[in-house]
Amino acid sequence: MTPVETTPPSTTTPVTPPAAEDSFSRQTVGITAQKIDTKGGNISDYLLYVPDGYNEKKSYKWPVVFFLHGVGEMGNNVNVLKNVGLVKVAGGKPFVIIAPQCLSGWWNPQYLDILYKEVLEKYHVDPTRVYLTGLSMGGFGTWDWSSAHPEKFAAIIPISGGGDVNRMPNLKTMPIWAFHSADDPTVNVNNTRVLVNALKALGSNVKYTEYPNGGHDAWTRTYANADVYTWLLAQHK
Image 1 (cartoon, one colour):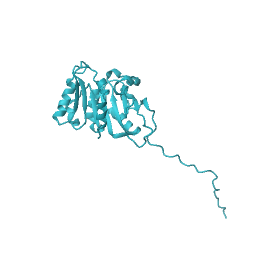
Image 2: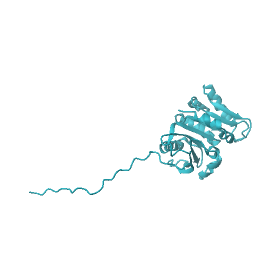
Image 3: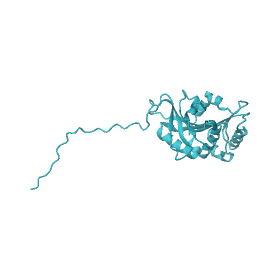
Image 4: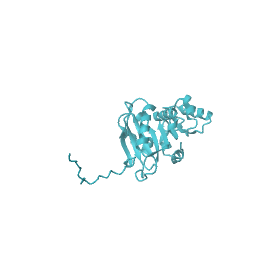
C-alpha cells in the first residue's frame, strides 16, 4: 500500500490583512507644489492649497477652485504663483485651490481636462462644487474652458479676459460673475462687455462688475472681496 502523505499543521500565526485606508490620502495643509503628467501638454506643475481641517473631516467633500494665471506667470517655476491672484490670498479660505502653471502658449482645455480628472480622483473634493476663475490670460482661459465643458463647473469668475461670443449659448445657465476695469489698457473692456451682453440676451443671470478705473489689474480688489466667496460657495451643480 502506498503511504498517504499528510501536511503537518501550520505553526505560523495567520497574517491579518491591513485595514483598508481612506481612499483619499492625507495632505499637507497650506500650499505645496505638485506634479501632473498631461501627456506632452503644456502643464507639468500646479500649486495645491489645502485648508485647515481637510485631514480631520474625512466625511466632508470640499469645494475646489481652479485658478488660471496670466501671461506674466508663464514658465517652469510654479512657486511664482504663490504671490499671484487667488493663491496670494489663499490663507484661511474654506476650499481647496488648484493653480496650474502654463509652460508656454495658451491655456488648453485638453490638458486642463487631464488635471481636472486627477484632482477629482486624488483629493477629497465635491464634484458638485467645482469652480473656475482666472485673470488676464487666465480670464480668457476661464471663458474658454468653461464654454468648452460647462458641465464641469458650478460657477465661474473670469477677470480681465475675453472669449468667443459664439460659444455663450453653452454658458447661458452657468452662474457667472465677471470683472473688468473700464480703463484696462491691456485687454480692452469690450472683450468682457460683449460676452456679458450676449449672455443677457440669452436670458442669463450673469453678474458683471465693471470698475471705473484700476487699469488691467481688476483682480486684486476682486479676490479681496469677501462677497465674491459668499456668492461663489453658494453655487452648486
